Amino acid sequence: MADLKPLIRYRKFALEEQQRFLARLYQEVERLMQRKDSMLGQVKREKNLTGEETDPQMIVAFLGYVERMQAQIALIDGEIRRVEARIEVAIDEMRDAFAELKKVEITNQRRLAERKAMLQKKEDALFAEIAEQNYLRRLREEREEE
Image (cartoon, rainbow, N blue to C red):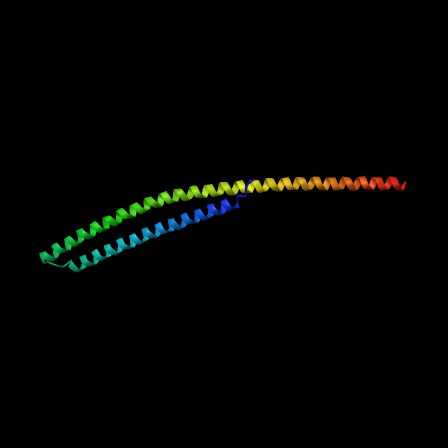
């Protein structure tokens, strides 16, 4: 039976790498959400500044600004959806990696239990043999004394 400890260490390392990758993806979504919130806040502030404005050029400029910001926000939303799709794939891969790790760990535990049982059986047989030899030796000693 091959030693499974190196394989277990490798699988744990691979799982940890996937967890780190997933964490980076979540951080990326958070960064994009903060950027989007910042842009929405800027639009709101600009709207408050131009809310009372009656100059048509300012209104047209503001509308152009809002359109550009909406386009940028739409791009960010698309990027968020793309990263979230990658997150779903990464979660599935991490689940698979975890399942593989557990399979190897369970196999290793079973092998260790079998080996322990085999060693216990050998030890029991050895003690039984020693007890039998002691019994036979005592019998011989008793016969010799008679």
